[in-house]
Amino acid sequence: MSTRAYHLHELEIARSLDDSRRVMPQLTSQHRRVLDLGCGAGQTLIASDLPGEISAVGVDVDFDALLLGQELAAPLALVNGAAEGLPFAAGAFDLVIARVVLPFVPIRPALAEIGRVLRSGGELWALLHPPRRTWRSLRAATQARDTRQMLHQTYVLANGSLFHLSGAVIPSPASGRYESFQTAHGMIRELQRAGLSNVIVQRARHHTVLTAVKR
Image 1 (cartoon, helix red, strand yellow):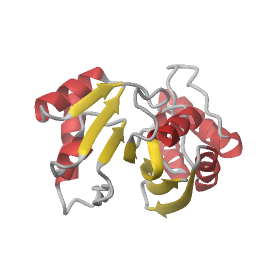
Image 2: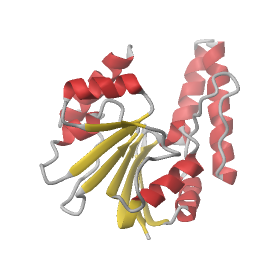
Image 3: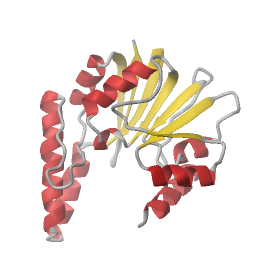
Image 4: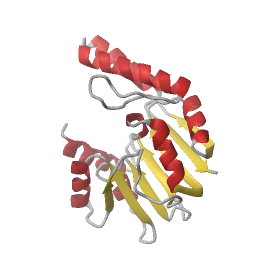
């Protein structure tokens, strides 16, 4: 599936209220300044149909995805940037959405940046990869005798275990990119380190939703 097709597919899911794969943050009147971290083409913001009084911005490292987002919703504010170096002032946002971005970045510096740009009382909503997802992927790669995927999923498994124990993650020796799974224990520890508390973890079969509040 091409990058364009992937993002369009994700937008279709986000817009389909009866799709069991749809997982969306709940925005309230307190969320007047929203950051979508790792926004892709901005599909979460587009599908949220935000009222005009909400100021929202999306950030992603994938410039082509951002161009697609501008094509889909021209007024949408999209910025090319990395999770571990956000180009925003401290306390700039009431809500940070991190939809499946933390599994693919250096988590500790990314959480530090999230804590920095959230105001006191601001909230984080994050969609994460649980350990069982990695085990399923490794088992599927083993059954398919896909050596490359077996090696990659073994790296993800080791990286997630490292994060659970120490909070650190390392880039893949093969690609130089990051990927890991996240445990509740590891996330709670690192969120507290970044100045967030009141952590709520909701587990589902294929994902974990986590919310936290900036102290």
